[in-house]
Structures are given as C-alpha cells and as structure tokens.
Image (cartoon, rainbow, N blue to C red; front, side, top):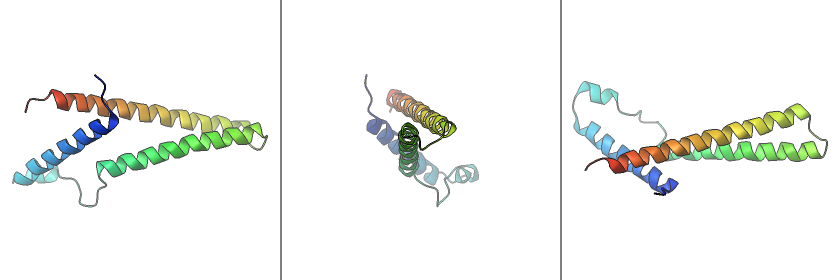
Length: 111
C-alpha cells in the first residue's frame, strides 16, 4: 500500500482537530493543561519551515561544492556543508517515515 505524504499530513491534521475538539469539550483541569499554547505554530507551519531549512541546507552543500571545484572554498568547508546536507536529508527521511507510520496507525483505528 503506497501512502502519499499529503494524505499522511491530512490525516494527522484531521486527528489533531478531533483531539482539540475532545479537549475543548472536556472540563477537567488536566485536559486544560494538555492544550497547545495560543501562539504555537501549526503542524503545517512547522513542516513548511523544516522543509525550507532542509532545502536551504541542500542548496548550501551544492553551492559549497561548486565553489570547491573552482578552488574558492576550503576542503573543510566542503566536508562540513556536505555532511550538514546529508544529516538534513536523513532527518527528513526519518520524519517522513514516522508520518507515514502514524498515518497507517490512524487508518487502522476503528471508528
């Protein structure tokens, strides 16, 4: 079964809405403590910001690689930029896998 990233993000957003509705209907003090702060960024804002940073890290690695080929960058700068881009890519893949697993878990839940 192939799951697209958009479907997983949409399912997560729907689950968040349901959880927020349950929390708002619950009048216990413990439930109020679980609510997100009013100024907290949404999941989509966090995801967008993270993906933009990942894209920038990749572009930075490519830029430093190009400069190193033209002898305009030091070797340690190149290694650092490429390592940063690789770490960022591994992080993005790990987050994607977790979102897909969460989506699959939500799909398996009985209604």
